[in-house]
Amino acid sequence: MRRLALLTFVFCFACEAAAAVLPMPVRTALKQAGIPLSAVGIVAQQTGARSPLISVNAKQAMNPASTMKLLTAYAGLELLGPAYAWKTEAYLDGELKDGVLQGNLVLKGYGDPKLTLEQFWLWLRELRARGLREIRGDLVLDRSFFELPPHDPAAFDNDPVRAYNVGPDALLLNFNTLRLRYLPNGNGMKIISEPALEGIRLDNLLAPQPAPNCDNWDDTIRVQPEGDSVVLQGGYPGECGEREHNLSVIPHTRYVEALFRTLWHELGGTLQGKARDGSASANAQLLSTHHSAPLAEVIRDINKFSNNVMARQLFLTLGTAGGTGPANLERSTRAVQAWLSGKHLDFPELALENGAGLSRMERISALHLAQLLQSAAQSPLGPELAASLPILGVDGSVKKRLKGSPAAGHAHLKTGTLEGVKTLAGYVRSRSGREWVVVFLINHPNAKFGQGAQDTLIEWLQQQH
Image (cartoon, rainbow, N blue to C red):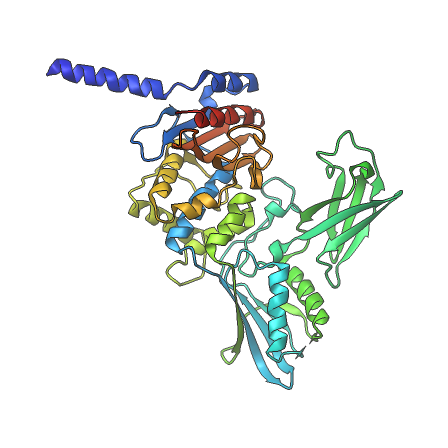
């Protein structure tokens, strides 16, 4: 009996040792990138299996970057439901007669992550169809559903105009961004702003400037918001042709006002007052409610394109799953922890800041990220989560990755990138039809060179029988 127990122990020890060994091509790729094994956390495990095939530093708490969105999206599906939709309300705070409102129009937001320019235009068109034409009071913006400290867009990386640094807002409109299109024209440069905002001026001071390559074409452009002006200075490489990027250069309240005025005037309406933050009076009457796309559709944008502000909006909404507000980070964190506990998932190292992974403090281990994906694979809502992930070599953030490889089209993967962080997590289907959960986290100054090692592991798993 003791001999049998000893043999069992030796066998189990051998299993653990085998599980800890990476395929040699992956080890070689990490070595070539200058990344030691101590800087990675890796798990590869067949879905439904009790133990992993590969496990390296699996319990080590690491920065997951945008793979943290997997936790936020999965929690959203189960706590809110795939059909969940956000609402935005319009109230008449005054008397409406013959198309004229003697009072204020109040817009109240509940955190819709994707109230785009197109959706907002359609909603304002509906307000016109309901009989509102002239507003003789103010445009009042009720953003109270989110209870947040002041947001500093420069806090993360000192680049406050980047779209990924937009802060969450209960009345987030069009991601609070402008899409600037650069159109070289001889020795000049035309810039188109979409949307074109009433009262906001583009001051184009760009000069032609050659570039060694066009990969980082916007590195020489300096964008400086100055009140209602957006000043663009520096150089633009005309040989790179037409390019575009999204920037956040206007505070939320001013952005909503400018876009409202633009679209409202196009629809034949007028606004005499100003825009201000506030709330409706007790006598205000609900005029219309706009409903967002369902959550199942929203998480596709969050994961396919790694949209940080949408993920932050969803994370804040998790704390209001019971139908009460206001939303804040503490309530959302408690809601996620309670949800994990209810699923018997114990992640003691988990550290949450915004649920998007755009953070230097968020932490999770490769083991627990893999357990999360295993749980989702067994959940009735798991297919919704998997379908929201980018398809390797096909779309989203991995559209150009391993495009000519046999693995292309055979993996749904979420990636994440920060300075010193390169991560990947998702599902790989092997040529034999087996499905694998894979998590590959790198936290190291050379992390940006680690993609080759991650791709090698994906291809190795795809070839497994």
